[in-house]
Image (cartoon, rainbow, N blue to C red):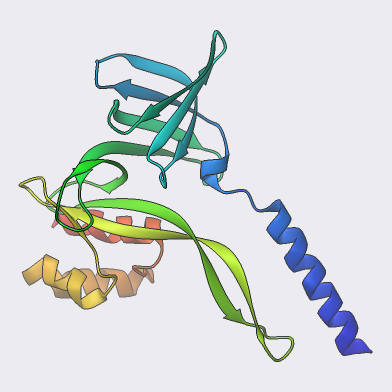
Length: 200
């Protein structure tokens, strides 16, 4: 009986958590947009990285939509993380063919420029309360590096590949990561690692 009650409580909490989950791209954020025409729009901004679309709304305008082709840059204050976030429209091709404008979030700028795109994915987890597993949606961050020639390269997600980019500063960065318990899986920790490397 106790196991059944524990299971029901877990499922209820899981269900409530899933219903209450709000992703940053589902919300309107206070922000500004710089268009390719040079115009700057200030008001409420809602972004969709999957479609590379922005929605803009202000008190005296009905909502308008802009593609990455029409936008140079946008910035929002994201209440979910209480941070300003900056995005740029940059030419990119996932399969090395025709490049099209795509929105990237700027996380760190310098010798290494770290960019990011987010996506929702279903992930499967083992359930600690009973035999079996469950799936849920999670927000996943994909990292990219912008080189000095303007090429954008997807990051593999392996520490060894990150250290290869850092060449002779690898040991210093490793010590910094260990001392501050930083991982490359968390977006803001990854930004902290790259920013530290850029100061060396």
